[in-house]
Amino acid sequence: MTSHSERAAAFLKDPDRVSWHDETLWIVRKKRDRAAASVKEWENLREKASKLKEYVLSDLAGLLTEFERNATLNGAVVHWAADADEFNRVVLEIIKSKNARNIVKSKSMLTEECGLNHFLQDHGVDIVDTDLGERIIQFRNEPPSHIVLPAIHLKKEDIGELFHLKLGTDRGATDPQYLTRAARVHLREKFLNAHVALTGVNFAIAENGTVVVCTNEGNADMGVHSAPVQIHCMGIEKIIPKMEHLAVFTRLLARNATGQPVTTYTSHYRTPKENGELHIIIVDNGRTERLASIDYRDALKCIRCGACMNTCPVYRRSGGHSYGFTIPGPIGTILAPHSVPGKILYKDLPAASSLCMSCSNVCPVKIGIHEQIYKLRQELIRKGYGSFVKRAILKISGFVFAKPVLYDISGKMVRIALKIVPRFLIYSRVNTWGLERELPAVPTQSFKEWYRQNGSN
Ligand code: SF4
Image 1 (cartoon, helix red, strand yellow):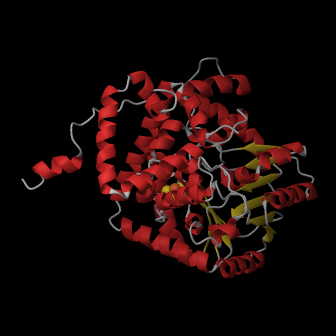
Image 2 (spheres, helix red, strand yellow):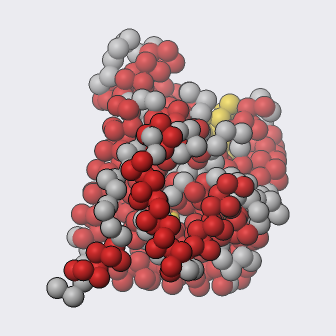
Image 3 (cartoon, helix red, strand yellow):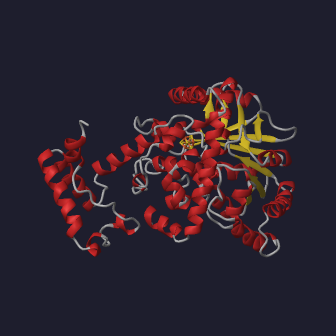
C-alpha cells in the first residue's frame, strides 16, 4: 500500500490542479465563515449540538431501540447489521426478494464505507449513483475525494471529456449548464426505471421513527418517489432524540458545509408509500468499539459537514485521494487508524497534519480533532509503529530538551553547522522536509540570548 506522502506527491505533480483545489476549498471555507457570522447564536448552537451528541452517545442503545419501535409502528421494516458484510447482504436480500435489478442511490458515505456498489455489481445488480458528483466518480470508477463535494478534485475540462465518452456530449464542451443538463437527461431515465431507491441518512429521530435526508439536488426524493421500494442506510450514531433537536443540526449542517442557510431539500421519510416498502438498515461496523474508547469516541459526533477538510492546509494541498481511506481529511485521519476493530491501520495519516487546530475550530459539534490526532501520534509511537529514525530523533530530542545547558550548546552547534555544511548535504534525500522548502536564514543568536539582551526593554 502506498503512503499518504506518496499519494500526495502524485497529486502535487499537477501544480495548477493543486492551486485550483486549494483556492476552491478556501472559497467554500470563507462562505462558511460568512454564514456562521450571520447567525448571532452560532456558538450556542455549536455548544448545543455538541452536548446533544454527547447525550446521544451516552444512551445510544436506548435511543436506537426507541427509534426502532416507532419506525416499526410507522410501517417501516428495521434491519440491523453488525458489519459491512452483513449490511451488504441485507441490501442484496431486499433487492432479490423484489426481483429488482435497477437501483438508484443518493449519496451515502456508509455505502462507500461498506463497498456496497461493488458488492451489488458483483451480484448482477445495476446500482446508479444519482448525486451528480457521485455519478461522475462512479463513471471514473474511483472513490469520492471529499464527503460533501465528491468530485472536487476534477476540473470542468475533465468532466467534459468524461461526459463525451460516457454520455455522448460534444467533445471539448465544458459549459457546466450543458453538462449538467446531459447528466439530468441520463439520470431521469434511471429514476423512471428504478425498482429500488437507496439513500443515506443524515439524522434519525428516535421519538417518531423518522429519517431525515439532506440533499441539494433533490435526487433522494426523485428516487424514493419513483421506486416502489425505499431503503435508508444509517450508522448507529445518526440518531437524535427529538424532533425539536433537528433544527439545531440543520441550522449548522449546510452553513458549515457550503455556506448555504439550509440544504435545498431536507426530506423527512416516515411511512411507506401506498403499496410501497420502507426499509431502514442500522449499521454498526466498528462504531461500538469506538464508543468504548474514551480517547476516540468523540469522532462519533461527526455530522459529515466536510468543513474540517475545506479548512485543512494539508487536505487542500494533497487532495482527498491521498488519504487512501473512504473519509479523507482530518476526520478521516482520526477514523481510519481504528476503522477495523483490533487493528491499527493507516499509521501514516496522523502525521499528515499540521496540528494547526483549524479543523477543531470549525467543527460544528466541537470534536477535538487535533487532540485526537495528537493522541493517535502518541499511541503509535508508544506501540512502536514510528520508524527507527523517528523514534531515535524523538529520544535524543527529549534528552536534549530536558537539559537546558545541553540545549543551549546543541542550538549553537546546529547554527554553526547550518552555515558550514555544504548545501547538498543539508538538502539531501535524508532531509525529505527540505525537498520542497528552504530553511529560513540562520539567526546569529538563540531566542534566549536575544531575550537576555532585549527582553526588559
Ligand atoms: S469532524 Fe466536524 S468539521 Fe469534520 S466533517 Fe465531522 S462535523 Fe464536520
